[in-house]
Image: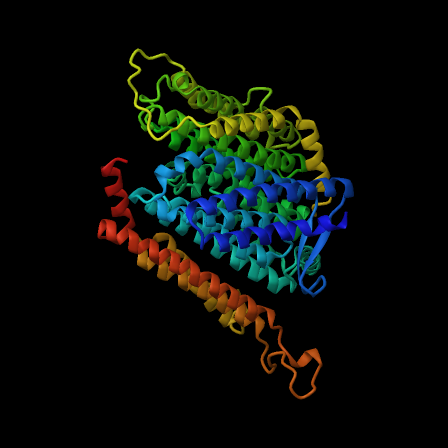
Length: 497
Length: 124
């Protein structure tokens, strides 16, 4: 089945071409192209995952005519393939879940552009997953940023444009740092392919005189990616960007775009810098501390919020904090927990955004907490979806969130001086999560006398119900079959470097 | 710091440019000044790359008179990277400028903080 080796490259190229074709189509045709594309790409990535599981190691796909140290290549193993498959599935469900709402949110003559941006976003996410070339990664980071910015501002009101500007400014600071980091890496090692850079790094560090430049590189790359994925002190743009964009955009941005950057950081840790060199640098302590702070401050901001969409957005800050805490632990278990939490958060946060739109639509379109009282009775499936998402985020067994919390707690036990802060903050954060999510769940199931709420824009579609059920299934599968998935992550990490 | 600073003054200038651009992009309130900061930051990076890619006395690797020894040529990849980077930064700048036009038409100001306060007053 060697033909499967072509699938990663084909799926990336197909996304790009679909984007180009869609730019000349009408909105509805572009939607069809996008739907077909996502189905095909999901199947291709599923096949790739099956193939890599059987293969048990990685394979390299050479892009162009030049072999390893010079040419550009993709490198595929279980880790990349499963992440890419996950991205495809979540994106497909998020787009399908918000499709009915899109008519109200986006002007008709801009509809095809929305799907162009979605196609490009998917292509950049897949490329970030698969590429083995640091500069290609940089180019696709920029494509990702531009597409995400377009997805924020396609709903034209003052808020979204301001949010898009703020998002761009922070993202560009991050990209500037990443670019400089890549340049210094290239100067130190003379390579752009990740595996070759790592050999160069080891050689450069043997002499001892490159210790400071290597540290600078690690710092620039880590902080750049942390800014782009909205780690705690750099999260100011996030609530507006997620809170006011279209519902599919919010779901995709929170569960995929930031995860693409984090996955690239994992790749840099393992394949570019080298796990040991990275863990010896003090930068992981910085990430650890900011991760912990994000877990607390994100949740407290969410508690204070009076708007359900912005509350979910702030909760993302806390969840990103979890992942960075996992990275900051600097152990194999911490990394595994971090990667598992990427899956958890991706599956849960998009469910929450999609369910929240159902709840607000049956409450006269208002997003204020007081208005959504009893919305769970008015829109049954949205209520169930939100409850499942909330329970998963809080960490109730059976759902995905419980497993990631368990993995984080297990990982923190073997840490030494970091164990106590990690466990304490994990506990506090869980309680804070419970406060704001359970508050919302109780509110949407509080019966109200007056049922005179107007239903706006929401045609209680079958597709929406299917999407909510699919997300719930995804959550439960992640929670129940976690053993297999953790095994898969371990297997992936073993051949990842 | 020390004896290497003077011979590498080009790299030092590149880093200073990077920091100037970074600070402007982060701290300026005016969106146009932010964009100028972005361009200065990127230019600093390209200067750094171009300097690192150039070796005095060598030429671009285009074989004209049968000289094939690598010692006579520079590495062309940094120049290629600079070109790619310029393309990326041009497109990002264009996007930022178009966003700025949108904001200015709506609010008649380029001050991002003022726009934020006005948005808060508007409510939604």
